Image (cartoon, rainbow, N blue to C red):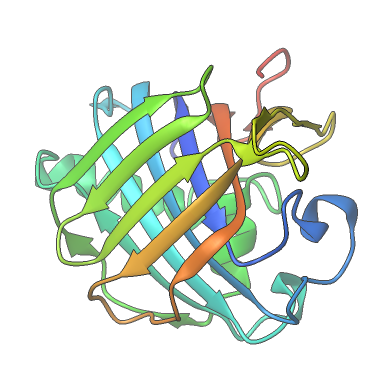
Length: 214
């Protein structure tokens, strides 16, 4: 196993209601799980391969809950990555260099036997985690927008925080509202409109979430 470590930000939009039942051990809001996730890596490495400043993404679809398996997945790695960097990210995001069940990447890959070839596409990301706003465009694959959850009465921005002390992705995340439209790739699902999204600061390694990471 090659040791690795990544710090960065994850922007996630799935098809569930705000809060996402999966975070509470409850079945998905609509019976299945669909998600688009973008990773903006600030610093990182896989062995001697530097991963700082790279971007990657993943599109997932499960016919039921994630733990029931039979999922589909396709990874996307930004064109700015070298072949060595892309290979390293692919190993990390398919759980190949991770202790069993220690990261979301390991779990998602294990539950997705239908894995399509990794794409190399330009990924553009802007985000303001404090304002809970963000946009991501995966060229020819997906357009993603995150914004604050609206107060049900006033429409003003509503703030909610997920805290998972033993989470395998993050310990804390800002909840948002997301919209995703897929424009290509092998995994397909209908547009996500005003469904669960979150921003999470990531600090992960081959042994899981690093203690003290938000």
